[in-house]
Image 1: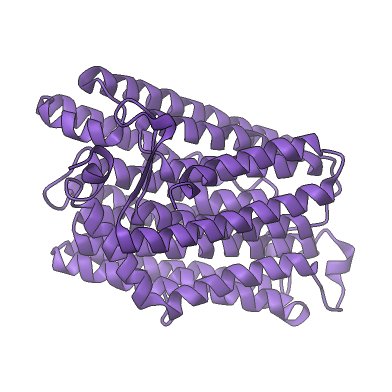
Image 2: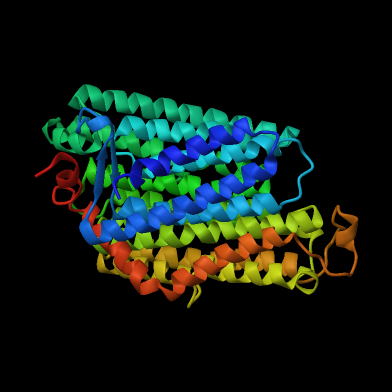
Amino acid sequence: MRVLVPLLVVMPLLGAGLSMALWRFVRIQQVLGVALLSGGLAASLALLAHVVATGPVVVHLGGWRAPVGITLVADVLSVLLLSVALATLLAVFVFAIGQPRADKSAFYFHALYLVLAAGVSASFLTGDLFNLFVAFEIMLVASYVLITLGGRREQVRSGITYVVINLLASTLLITTIGLIYAATGSVNMADVAVRLAEVPEGVRRALGAMLLVTFGIKAAIFPLFFWLPDSYPTAPAPVTAVFAGLLTKIGVYAIIRTQTLLFPGDGPSPLLLAAAASTMVVGVLGAIAQDDMKRILSFHIVSQIGYMLFGLGLYSVAGLGAAILFIVHQIPVKTALFLVNGLVETLTGTAALHRLGGLVRRTPLTAALFMLAALSLAGIPPFSGFFGKLALLDAGLAARAWTVTGISLAVSVLTLYSMTKIWSNVFWGEPAELPPLAVAAGEGPLRAPRLMNAATIGLVALTLAIAVLAQPVWELSERAARDILDPAGVYLRAVLGP
């Protein structure tokens, strides 16, 4: 099993190089990408079963043990989230293959996508701060190009905002890592966790706050979310879907990993709970104010990040377990909703609510897929979002965090309202203006390419499977929470030895 850990990072990179070498043969690139992502998913699931049974798997690259060498760590938290992430990456890749393309960028899309997949795997598996920075940069280098595929003016303008914000965040991150190295003499997370105990309290708090701000920008928490709603909606549908479903969640993962391992608390954090409540409220109010399906969904990314922060702010097994369960459900649900948006745009040429209407009669499959994912996002029982929100509610009440718990309930109602707004304007009623595609203004049925439908059906089916398997997924999430709240007994012991 140890060999699978580095392979999950190396194989997508080798595949990206091979794809570039085969740039004239797009079909071979597509087959290669599906094979590598499918293999990665199978490997991560096998690794998850092994980690649950025997504990974390630690690989010291080159035989150099921590804290000297590069360390990869596969524990329940990292492999559970990586498995969901790879399933999502595979579905979006299949969706992209099925999407009709008129631009000439297709030949390098596949290579960039595999580079992005390598960055995602490295982010979850790395055991030191500097390589976490490198993993983020690998993802960002790929995303800088992917977000401007097509080269339209609004894409370039939004892409510049995305690039500038992320470069600033990367600068802050490498500066913080440098300060941590200056204070502790190490960047290995397990070693830093031990040495930070000897650092003065004020310095430790400042370093913790800097890491929280850095990853908070990448996760789009309040008040650091301003860049996201304008950056994602202009990108191609598959790119927006994978960014919306994954990249912000990796930021949340980095917050959970660093705050529990390096700067452990002793109870609920009023600062994190306030940020969680603000993120939930601002995101959902922004969503309600929009008149475009993709922008509504983009603001919902922000709102749902608040729920994850809520669980971390409670700083209990129940709270963190609920946050992890919520992330597991959110990655496929949010991605599926953006894929539905991609289907609507492909069929009609627009996502503007006032130019859409009556699609439930002309493409009932797309309407059904949206309905299932939207009900899950809103947390309506018995869909997957219900279990994550119920777990957060229980944890919030147990911690007597009455205000944030009440706000989370109110935001759920507003989320349902905004989903109803999309349903009533896109799938019900009649458009106020004609859509841009002539075929969409007729009365006949609209049919999307089969692969696009198949990929979206697969992700929605995954969200339904999470609902059906809610009990075992909750047990995995709770196990991951117990492990990260006992770093000395699990993570540090696995990396540094007894």
